Image 1: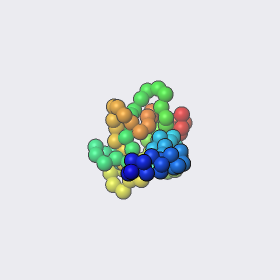
Image 2: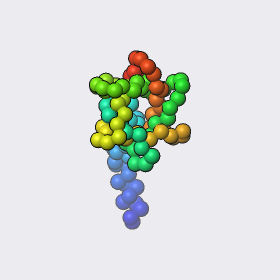
Image 3: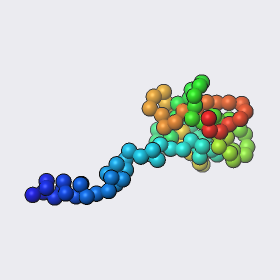
Length: 104
């Protein structure tokens, strides 16, 4: 009887509720990651991979005014975001540039 009730509930549930975990909104928007950044080895907000081509975000390291997408000011305390550099399974990929930062 329990199995029948479960199958009935599953059949009548909206498809969006059943497939909510597979939406594209699960992937973070790299263009929103700017400001004060702290590099960490554990408990990051985002895991990123540094690449030479085809990045999701081009990053410029700045000393002040990290107020636009792709501008990162590296800090040791009170960060806006904590970033861990990884070589596999990143949340998004970045490329360090000297000019024209932002979404690629």
